[in-house]
Image (cartoon, rainbow, N blue to C red; front, side):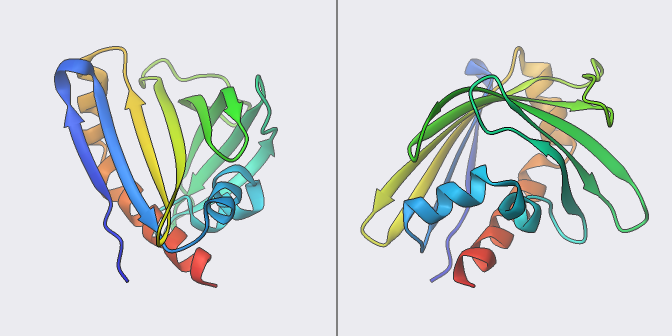
Length: 162
C-alpha cells in the first residue's frame, strides 16, 4: 500500500499541517523519528543524506545534524527538544545553523509539533509546523520543503518495510 504525504498551507495561522500514514506500528515509527541511527537512514531526500553529529533526545536536549549533498555540500540544522511525551508526541524548534550549532538568523525558526497515532493499518504522524510570520513560512516552502520532506518520508516507508 502506498501512503501519501499531505501538506496543507494555513497562511493566516502561519502553519504547515502535515499528515502521513505508515504501514508500521506507532512504536517503530516513533523510534525512527527519535533515534539518530534511524534518522540518518531516512531524514534527507536522496541523493542527500543526514549525518548526526550529536543527539540528546530529552527535554532541553538537541539533535545537531547536517544534510550532506552529493557534491560535498553541507546544510547544518539544530533541533531543540521542548516537550516529549514518549511514544505519542514531541515538540521541538528547528533552525539552520553552523557545524557548532550556532543559529543562522538568516533563516526562520520552525516549531515542530509531532503527534504519533495508532491506526487500524499501522500508524499516522500528524505534524504542525509553526512559523513566526507568513514570510518565514513562505521562505521555507520556496526552499523546497514540501518536495524534500515528502521524499524523506518515502525513505522512511522503505526503512519501516525492511
